[in-house]
Image 1: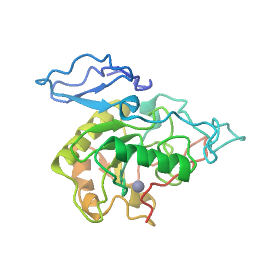
Image 2 (image 1 turned 180 degrees about the vertical axis):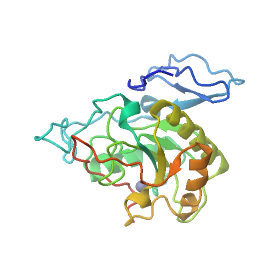
Image 3 (image 1 turned 180 degrees about the horizontal axis):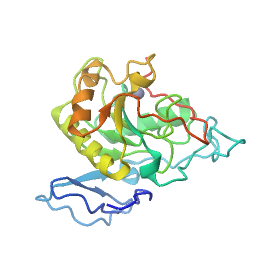
Length: 246
Ligand SMILES: [Zn+2]
């Protein structure tokens, strides 16, 4: 695929991946997506509209308005360069909160991030349910709010569950790997890391998921760890941690 600087527009079939790789269909908010055929090996991402996400709140107290150099360094930051030049690391999280499969948990995470933490939107770019369903979070064109001090250039992927006490399911890990491989094609990151590697005070993503990190990195052809992080040249690194800062 060529330069992939655009947003993940709803309803866009991301084409051009090798046949052996799953393709991802972003389901549109209005439900007029092409029919998914059961025999297709396409991976889909459930859109924000489909899981009931609230819109981005640019009046949020801690991520208020748009980023301005010198004026509002912690605001909503949209990457000025193509995304392949903007991302270095995929950061893996767990949600810790777990209300129920799917949208109920996502809505609770978004509520926590918006209402309790004062961010403009859910902090993660993607979330993966225990049954392997992938959900769209914050738009990839915007800096996330998930890894305090290291958000710029870091795409946040949250697996739903509390992996201090349980292991991720095989379906969940398989879906996470498919998503990671697709993001490698889309963003050309160099590294994959667990949240705790950047922010040692958190236990996220929990020992049961942390044990999978090196294997996921290897399977996706990424290096493991935080060495890919590059401080932002023109942006303060934003607020943020994850819901699981225990
Ligand atoms: Zn985290």
